[in-house]
Figure 1 (cartoon, rainbow, N blue to C red):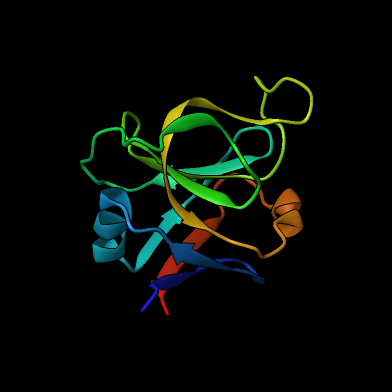
Figure 2: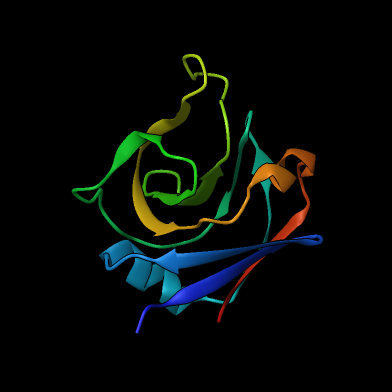
Length: 124
């Protein structure tokens, strides 16, 4: 059975399917999570204290819908468009991150999200 979680910011709800990775397992075991988020260009990120190394699927340029974890900063990040270091329209993160989940939901609502708003992730 596939594991899923719900990511909520204000009225925005995103359903994420977890991958079969160590990072996904560790994050799943931390749920529920409720944190204040930060924005960086078209990326939101927030703290999540998980100790894991970079995995084989780690990368810094992600596809829309990939949900990542940055081990060095201990942040979960959701990229939904260009960041300050992107070239053209790519979603370029500050460093390599582990892909732990994916969503097919629209992320366009994240354009209206501001620093210090709360994000909550729960198991479904």
